[in-house]
Image (cartoon, rainbow, N blue to C red; front, side):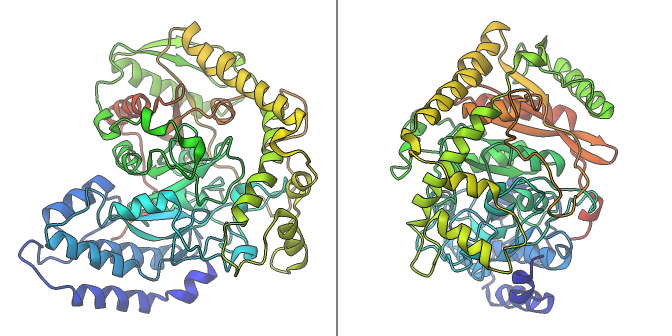
Length: 536
């Protein structure tokens, strides 16, 4: 739990708030008299059903999560702060349900947002003290849609500062939220940048969380924290009101404990937003995602299998082979695809992100309230160099981005964008699906969580300067540059640490991927909750 959260909500105050709201809520015949309701490992869809049936109330569920965060997040640092009106939101939901005016299946369900999504009533810090006074006047489009569906916006989850785009040296978490820890082993990393979202979901600190991804920041933390994570097609979900890295690659999506829960959230947050022009085609490709939950979806399908290099952890490869056995047992035909069929697009991604960050961040900062003194990337660099809460970390990515010129009209940038899309789309995922007659591609999402390195430890970073092939390509980075969807599902533990399996497809294939992932999940039951998730 961050310092901010400790200051705002002591354990005693948490109990008082919950008791007060539950005590003030008028009893009705629709609700059970039993106020005991365990939120531990309770799925979002089960909570939704229990709220609809009157088995529980949103005030009870919300209070349960607040108490659990207060009691258990101390050394995990997954939650930056709880919304000061969380219980009031819950009471309003209970009143709507009592009046027969429910807003839908998510009404009253508590969800945490990554702290780079604007949400009225709380600062959007992106993990930096440069934005500690960034209290948005409007919700992000994602928050607006969730709020309109009756969701209790429970608070803000920690993250890698500016979604991990500050420097190449190790920087665990954020200056505002501290260093998140993996709940399966607190000496291990929860990965980034949606680290807090991953930990909070694994630990049942909310019914679900919202993460963002530019190059693996949803699926990576989901894999190492043993949960489901979905990165949609670029701009299926609006990016308005989200602190950006690159509109070419930024996406927002659900991080949940089940595929069904992810589908329920995507049904609400997906769609065209006139204030995100990149989303103009989203409505045309929308599908009812919960209707895609089919336990026979893999039957008769061809699954393109991309096995990682032999140097990967043997136990991960064993888990992957076991996952493939499940997929085969569900009626799918496996088609082997050599790993070297994928091309490493990191040189293009580096050029794209460095140029985009300056353009897109400056555009976002112009929308922030006057209380925010940092108005440009140059201002952010100056603040972070001078402020003692920030200046212990390097910022080579920021310096390199600030040095770019030409914006999205720069010739080298346009060449990188064209090359990256060609390599990852026409000659990448689209070609592999067509050439091998596959309906979907699968691969391990990654390796188990690594040891946490001290801040400042030198590393190459996600976009190394080296030539193509500096790192082996993988589905995550290829799909990132392509802007194509991914979903990761737990496939078991390697040395006591979770790893996931990724299902990837072409643009707008979310419904199909949800179906395949759900079929695998229901047949494998491979998710193992963290031991410390015990309690109520």
